[in-house]
Amino acid sequence: MKFSSEKLFDTIFFTLIFIWCIGILWEVVIHFFPNLIVALPFLKYNYSIVCHQEPEKLFSIGNYKTLVCSRCTGIYFGALFSSIIALTGLIRKTNTKVLLSSSIPMFIDVVLYSFGLYSYSKTIALFTGLLLGSVGFIYIQDALKIILFKQKKETF
Image (cartoon, rainbow, N blue to C red):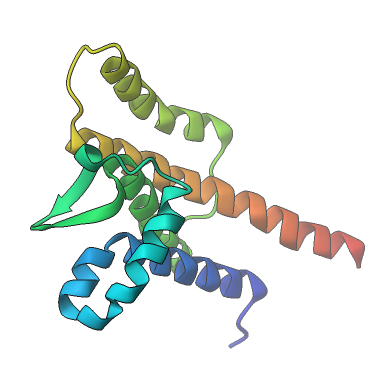
């Protein structure tokens, strides 16, 4: 059985997203492996590059908090979910309309919260992030495959 370059790409992409998601849950990891606390300042800094990390918007898991807000947690774990499905070969591609449609619930949530029509909901932020992250991952992965593999075929 030949392991195709696209399958290798899917596996590498999954591995990177999996490691990223473990980092998001680093406070939980530290509970089980206390010596790994040395990585916490480095991880907090790196996640601060991609997320505002407002304390009241961090998702709680028991007594522990994620290193990114609820929405970002949803986005990254949505991507992880889709990367697992992509490894099975069940998901192939999506289009821009589906991507934009999946962003509408998040957009509505942000607008309603910004105008003060309701208070921030970590649960809603998590689920709107999961939706966009799941679809967004498929869209980005497909675009990268087109760039990496279709152009490669055309040059030979």
